[in-house]
Image (tube, rainbow, N blue to C red; front, top):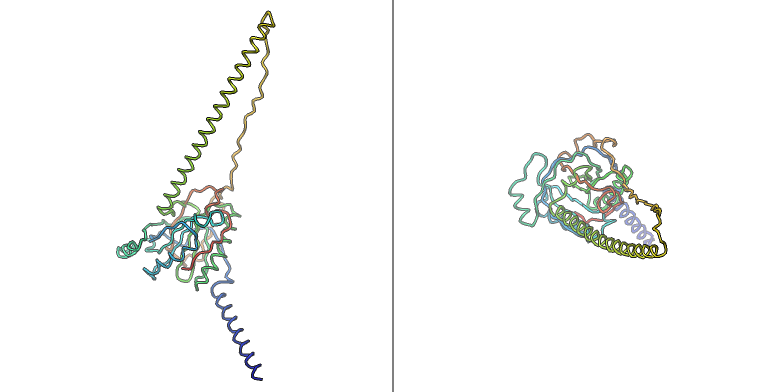
Length: 321
């Protein structure tokens, strides 16, 4: 009889434990509906202290911890520039930090010096005009992992279906919500100086490679043309001499018409970005929720480029804050 009682207690404890875990996961946002919309963002211009890194997004967790250890009262922000589905983890670029001020407020000199002391840089983002956005509950550390695996695929689907150019991915952790913001215009304003420098070097390297290939191709073409010209001239001279010997009088010849076919290069336009007017612009909620959170974004990117956050599905795992 005592054995049955013991088994019953064990079963009750296991059941209670499972219910507790299930309740925790539900509280973290397991069944929360992810709603993606496009319109005016619930954020304003901000000044942030950040650290820039190149590497796996999973390393962002330590940077979040670094910022939180300096000031736990400020809100966290993460800016992710590359699509981890198309860019190798060691080449992904991101900036993690804390929001020092929002809107018309100015950050204090003491805060700036404190963050700079620990290697953080100071930068400002303008208020975004149009964005693709979504929110997710931020109630437990597990909420971060649920949000990353649920919100990013929803954003990808929304952006791909409407053929939008929306990047980078910006995450703001404020109170009990995580705000996901993808700028539709002026994306370059959300590139921190280190990111802009990497982009500049990348473009310069690509231009040099293209010039080198052009020079090599041009030299080969010139060489082949000269060879053909010499051979044609030699053949022409041989034919002329032979004709003058065989024929007592020069014969008039008709010229054969060459088949001049020009190769048409058709420019394959990628998915052209929809204009703001074509979108059903929506304002999230009643506009009261998260005012003054984030700045305006913009980056004139090509829609065919999938290295950045444009159209490919993304579900990068990131470290906990």
